[in-house]
Image (tube, rainbow, N blue to C red; front, side, top):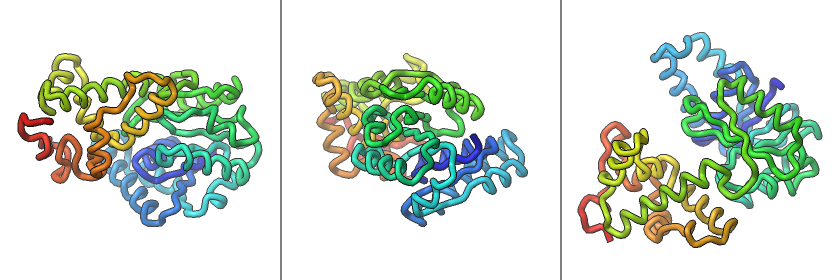
Length: 300
């Protein structure tokens, strides 16, 4: 397995492309937007520069990594001759199903198809293809070049052979693969999202403020960042989408998204990607500033 296609040049897609290319794979990075592709390549280059500055890699490795990546704005051209496709598009089930229908038409019958989905059923995704045994989940963590975990999700029909191939491939990327079964939220988000939602509910109910909630979890539970800061990094729209998948999948009210989260997403306050969530991100991430909306104790 040498030729990889990555669909989506956003945060996850460019991170996945970066990681494969750094480890010697030929990567076709695909996005319908040329602007997004160029932005993705610029992000990869900047992140490689950081690795060079920290002496994690050499300048030669950086140049080799960039030379391993080609960009495509037409899906059919980008997936023609590849061994594996990793889809990293927006967490939207209709979009993902449409992509996998096309992948089933445009790729070789032997090509493995993986989704970086953080919550959507792999079995559902596989059902729109003629090769459900070759469809699997590869849920990378953000930032992909740094985070070791890859959650490997087996759909109902995913074969043992394909699972082993993807586990071995993840190890080649110097990642730690963990195999889980295909149920809503898998493991990572089934545990993480209710915690984030409860933190938002605590803010909504006026139990404590943004910095207080995050400080308790950082200093008391040894988390590297608090749940509200993490939600801003993930994207509040993504958090909302995952919670709705959990709520629909289990039919349990404990997964119901907090009304504050719903309102923030409706208002376009999505976290880092929009410049404001629970924190203001207009001045970077070094000095956290609680968003004006939450600057006082009048929380609700």
